[in-house]
Length: 325
Image (cartoon, rainbow, N blue to C red; front, top):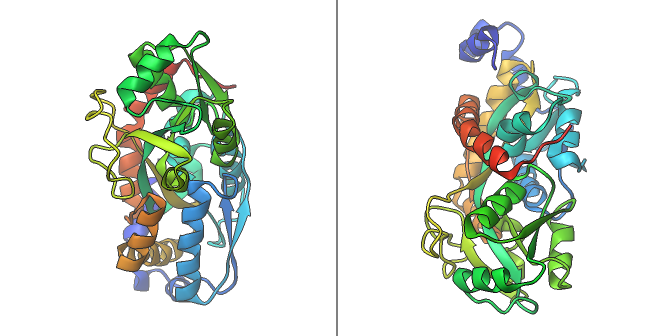
């Protein structure tokens, strides 16, 4: 939780903070390290690179990507939490870190409410249920469920790890549809997709951005999305509600963050830049082509969303039975 002193600092006019107004105007004065807690090629990595390109264009400084995947994003998040709070290390933290991890782990090396300082929302997108066009004959969600129920060994679904939205959504989908589902964890979509294409994995209910190229190429077949409305990147794909699965709306999201205790003027400068970038039509179009919506917000907007969604994810963790030490 943001301490009252920090919240008060964020609300203080810049000219009333001696020595920090200049820091806001100058940030960044040198390259910024960007820790991406997921492998190269996944949605978080791809969308972060677009943002960093825009930040570099506006500031003239380099934003250097460092991929630190593993443990459902926790390895990279821990690296951020332990970094120097000077405004020169930041990371795209997905909702797993903000809203889910606390219900999954007996012990975490970080506390999301204490150790991170949100900068701005970055993106949001639905999950999509995707199957291999070659190995799964079903062309609709109803056909897929019937086909899956008839399989002797049930179905398998991949995710980037236990407790990710892909795992929780896959478990909930199988439970509601009466499917015998087996969860298979991977490091990310870059490993899930080859497993599906080889027939070793039945389906994924994962972040849409990672699978749009697969669907557009015809190698994957999208059967439904988890958003309230159809997604413009895949306009012919129905929502889960349209496909006969009501009350199943999930939006994955990501917010950029510093470690806690970064000076308030730097937070304000970075947040303003990211909100400007998210509002730019050309950037919105680039995000949509990958399957995501560009989103910007104040730091408090990130906290509000994270805390609002925690009860929903707590219930999904309970239903899935997921637990990690």
